[in-house]
Image (tube, rainbow, N blue to C red; front, side):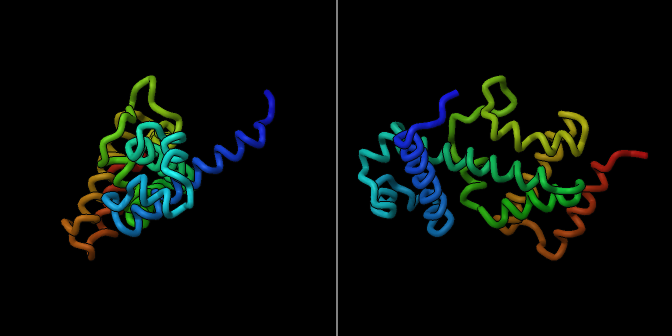
Length: 178
């Protein structure tokens, strides 16, 4: 396989910068603030350059932020040493990167989960859950519970003082039976 050309590397670098800038704007000011015009102004690219990387505009950018988020979440959970650390990594990611988390799970995208066409970053993020539970259905249930905790906490629907107890109970439900 040939190494990438300078032009290909420059294009990939521009694309990465667009995705990073979109995530930064969304984290600071919410997704409503992420427009092609604002991105172009923020990073000094023309709007046609942005559309050259993302022909479907903002939707493609949201998708790219979501994919980057899944890759980051996969790395964090993959580095967790045990089920408790995995749960902590998931919840901390959701808490510290709410806009990326929203792109991953709440905003409309064409990303397909649990299908043959599921992109690799989504599969990679599901991998640590599978490893921790040893079963696909249990992994989906753990993921659902973590997502529920993250989303309810984010919207102030759960008592903050009980977060540790909730996570410990959840871990107890998924710990292998002896």
